[in-house]
Image 1 (cartoon, rainbow over the protein chains, first blue to last red):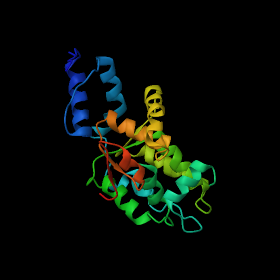
Image 2 (cartoon, rainbow over the protein chains, first blue to last red):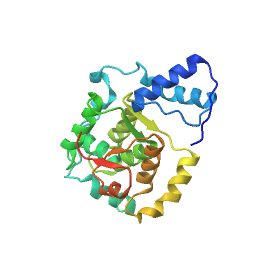
Image 3 (cartoon, rainbow over the protein chains, first blue to last red):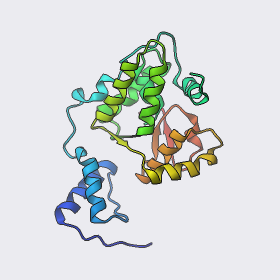
Image 4 (cartoon, each protein chain N blue to C red):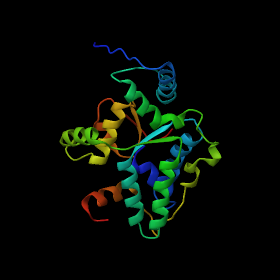
Length: 86
Length: 135
């Protein structure tokens, strides 16, 4: 298996490791350069202590936000959507 | 997280409302890990809900906004390489998986995620991915 050595600042590596552990529960560094690490950190840094209380999470507002006028089945509707019949 | 869960949770008149709500709640309350979805799934979810009579396009758009805003859900924005890989993989499933679903499997493999919450048995065709219908 090939290996790639990454040279980056301690802070960048540390933040990257914390985010990967938060997302996957394990650390597996693959082919990433420092710039790739920075982009990754920027994209997912919200995972580090950025979680709001669960009752404030936007997911709480999705449940039953609307009601179709008749009984619906998402699997059936997806087939219709793909066939252009919805 | 695929479209079936988001739509089911959002629409009180969907057959999967109760079970899908359980899945979304497990993510919100932390009994399931942070969720991963894609912009393709958000697109499909909003489009489908918006076409349902009585649901309302405003409510459909709000669902998309809420998914993207949640810190407990990572929304992956499909890039050139993921799209090309997904298009190349699409014929492998003989039409049982939509391109949106294939994109989800490609993104999952990139992020070493091997469990998908979905009602769509098409995902059972994908090796290395386990479909879950409850938390």
